[in-house]
Every structure is written in C-alpha cells, then in structure tokens.
Image (cartoon, rainbow, N blue to C red; front, top):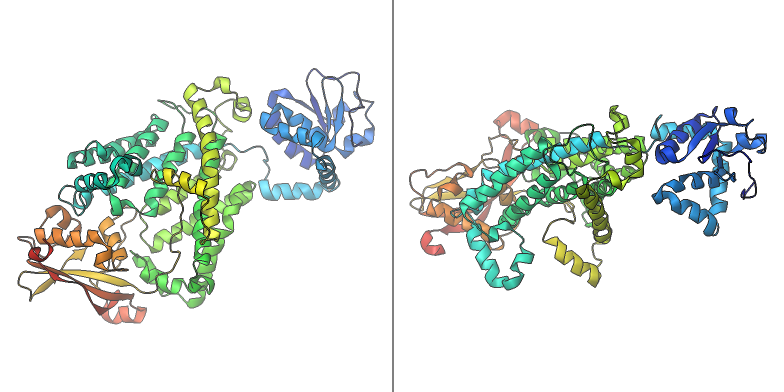
Amino acid sequence: MKRSEHLRVPNPSTKPLIIWDGECHFCRRWIERWREITRDAVDYATSQESAERFSEIPREQFERSVIYIETDGSVFFGAEAVFRSLRCRSSKKWLAWSYDHVPGFAAVSESFYRVIAFNRRFASAITRLLWGNDVRPPAYFAAQRWFLRAVGLIFLIAFVSLWVQIDGLIGSTGIIPASEFLPAARAQLGGRALSILPTLCWLNSSDAFLHFLCGGGVVFSLLLIFRIAPALSLVGLVVLYLSLAIAGQTFLSFQWDILLLETGFLSIFLAPWRLWPKRGSDPPISRAALFLLKLLLFKLMIMSGVVKLTSGDDSWWDLSALDYHYWSQPLPTVIGWWTDQSPEWFKKFSVAFCLVVEIIVPFFIWAPRRLRLLACGLLVFLQITIAATGNYCFFNLVTIALCLLLIDDAVVGTPRGNASPARMVRGQRSELSLPDRLSIYAASIVIVLTLPLNARLIYGAFKPEAEWSPMLGRIYARVEAFRIVNGYGLFRVMTKDRREIVIEGSADGIDWKPYEFKWKPGDVMRAPGWCAPHQPRLDWQMWFAALGSYRQNPWFVQTVISLLDGKPKVAALLERNPFPQSPPRYVRATLYRYRFTSAQEHRQTGAWWKRQELGEYLPGVSLEDVH
C-alpha cells in the first residue's frame, strides 16, 4: 500500500509501535538505531511475535516492510512508517512533513525503501562495511575528554614556549617592544585601535604584565588538563593568547597561532560548564559544537590541499614538490635530511598521498563510522610524517587533537555516555544547567554567523581570484581581528631555493664573527635539530626574512640594532653570542644559498649542509648609521 491511512487495527498499544522482521540482520541493526533515537516514545516488537495480534494486516506485509501503528490504530508501512516514527524528535519532523507535502518525496522515498527491502542481505553487508555492527547515533564522551585535555596541553606548550622568549621578542628591551607598538597603533588608528587590535595589553604593556599573561595561560592550561572549570578555562586561554598574539605582532602571526585560537574558541561550546566535572554526570555533548570543530578540521585540510593545486605552482601537479620541500622548509629535522635521500618515485608517491589525504579524505569526516575512522587514521598519519621531517611547532598537535573528535565511544569500548540515553539523544533541555543551555544556543548562533564566512573561505581556495561580496567582506573584516574564523593553506607555492641570512659582528670592521642561532641552519657541520612543539620564533622569522629584503622586514633591522646595543634579552634568543663582554661596533648580514648534502657528500665531509655565498643582505652598519 502506498498510502496506508485507511488501514486501522482495533487493538492498538498505548504507545506507537514499530513491528519489524526479527530474522533480518539488516533490520536488527537499524532498529537499534531507531530505538536510540525514539527511546521511550515508541515501542518495538518483532513480526514473529506480533503477527497474530494484528490479523488485519496481511501476513506478507510483515515480511515486506516495517510497520508503524499509531495509538489511534492507524497503520503505516515502509518509508512512511519510518518517517512517522521519528516525529518524536523535533529535528526529524521534517521527514514526515516532506513525505506529506513535498511533491515526489514520497515516491522517491518508497522506491528507495523497496530497493533496500528487496536487497536486504546486500544492504546488511554494506552496513557492516561502513558502520560495523553498531549503527546507533555515535556518542563522543571519551573523545570530548581526550580532546579538551589535548587542547589544554597544546595551550600549555604554546604559553611556555612563548614565555621563555617574550622578553627578547616584545619586551621593553626586545626586538619590537609591545610598549612602543600599541601607542604607535593608537596614534595611527585612533578610536578604532581597540576593535582592530583586541588585546588586554591596552591596559598594561609592561614586561611584568606580559609575564602575567603567560603565567595566567599556564594556569588556565593546567586547569583545563585536569578538567577544572573547562569552559571558563578555555575562555581565559583564548582571551590571554589573543592578547599576546596581537601584542606579538609579526612574531605571533603564524597559521598555528590562529589555528589554536580558532580551535580554543570553538572548544568553549564543547566543554561542560561545570566547576568540577565528574565522570558519570557530564551533560550531553553539543552537536552544534561538534559540528563546528569538525568543520574546522575539514576546512583546514581541504584548503591546505586545494590551494596547492590552484596556486599555479607546477611542482604540485607534476608531483615534484618534495624534491625541494625537505631542504627548503624553514626548520627541517635530521629525519628530513634522510628522507631527502629517498628515491624519486617515493617522493612523487608521497606528494600524491599528501594531496589525496588533504583533498579527498576530509569528505570522509562526515561519512559513517569506518570511513570516518579511516579519515582519522590517514590524517593523523600525515601529521606524524610532517612532524617527523620538519619542525612545525604545535601545528601538527592541534590537527591531531581535532582528529580525536572523529573517534566515537563505540570504537574505544566505553559506555555510550554518562547522561541518560534520553538526554543524550532527545536533548531534554530541562536537565541541562543554564550555562550549558546558553552554550548550545550560542554554538547554534556561531554556526549561522560563521558558516557563510567559512564557505566563502573554502570557495576562495578553489577560486583564488574571486572577490568577496560587500556584506560578507564587512562581516569578515570585523571578526578577523579576533582570529575565530580563518583561512589556511601552508606551502601554497613550494619554495624552490633556500636562502639563509648569516648575521656577523665585528669590533673593528675587519674581523667578523658569526652569530649562531639555536635552530635555523648556520654551521654546515651541525645536524638539523628538533625543537617542536617549541617554536623558536626569531629562527622562524629569519626564514621569511631571507625571502625578501631587510627593507621589507623592519623587525630585522631592529634585531641588528638590538645586537649593536648589546641587549641581553635579544642575545639570549641566539645559541652563541660571539661578543659576550661588549657589543660589536659593526653588524652585517650576508645571504647564502643552502642545500642538503647528498649521502655521499655527508660521508666524505661530515657536513649536513652545503652553501654558496650570494652576496650582501645588509651592509655593515653601526649605531651611528641607524640612529
């Protein structure tokens, strides 16, 4: 029967009832899913035990489809039965409404249902292949705990890493003091300065306050790791790190800085609003927050892959990018050196693998469990290989943390949650605290506000030349300062040459001694180091400086002036200061081309690098020249 409103039974149950074939493995799996969704609102029974009770229903109908009996005795079959049974969920009511009102919806639904019904063995195999033996709506209580602790750990690393460098970078005697930057910004921007540069350092930009922000970040990170006031801790972490990122100027403008801020902001809506969360009493996990964080992972990966192909760089299309990457990346590791010695076919395969994982695999984030887990494994593996060959600070850790949200409780064998199933699935707001309810509403608002921006950012990866619409452009300009909606895409264009700046000082202008950095290439005999997840920010900036001129990098000139002034905090950022007693009278910078040695060259000389002098980067200057 296509429309079954006219069939009624005289002895209906006091609750709606679904009758299904108890001998069908496919039905058994999906009935468990419906039980989870409808919970107490609908009863379930097998046709084997109910056929005699409802003799008005033809016997062959029990074998052909599921049957749904309303409390008034109305009987429905097939897809219509499924849709009507799900009306107890507000988020599923649209299915029954569409069946009744949308032209063609009923016919298509019933046709699709018949195909499944007549091929149940094949459908069961597909279900097992994609979902495994559990097709119930996934729960993510374990993933939530792991993810929030991971975020706390990454923030801890980020704050501590910055804390040990902050005096030399943006302290009062650092390279670009925040105490000088902010007044200059206010003078230029006027009343707009606060909205364009949202930082607590407007209140105080002293060294003590910068240390206070770093120390506060450490405290909030530890609270989050131990699950103490997790939501409030995340609010504190985002505010403090954003404040430091703004004050840090060019030294805190890396993609992992904005990725950490966007992740931290969205995590606020995932975290329980509890002072002392206890296992066994966690509130239902916000599906809106989970969607936002999965969308962030999807955006991060898809943009990172697509921009490589739309950049116009042929090395991604002909799979030769890794012929350059291992030795041209900012801070390679010794594993990167060894990987650079691998055969050409392996490098090409690795490029292809990277592009597939970044462009194709992210779509599996939204797929059933086993494809989702495959995506998780491939994405994590890619991040591990990237981290092994290059120092990308905490970027890989943030990405791996986001991947944890792809692992549901059924995978790890934990109970399906600590709240009652009805609360988990039906989302009874009366059992949620007011902060939790407000957090869910806020996450929904964030989806509405940011989804167009994220869609435009992703579209921009495919069409780099496309212009923003005026309205979206204005909205993005307002939120961009807060780093909560961002675009991504590392190595859009592969760097095919490696230029390194060697800074030297001299007391007399004749005898020049090099400054050795802690991590960036300098001495060709020194093996590439491993500093991640710590980020030596000056070392990183030196790589970018070598891509341009000193005129394009004012901070570089300030670094030279700091060395001429003999500022100890700046010298502490270096591995070796050749002028420990008194600063040099002159400082200059020379540009070199660096390249990994081959395995044979390394065996013969012991050198990890070979270099060729290219010429002057900054001519020898003294304090008299720069003041």
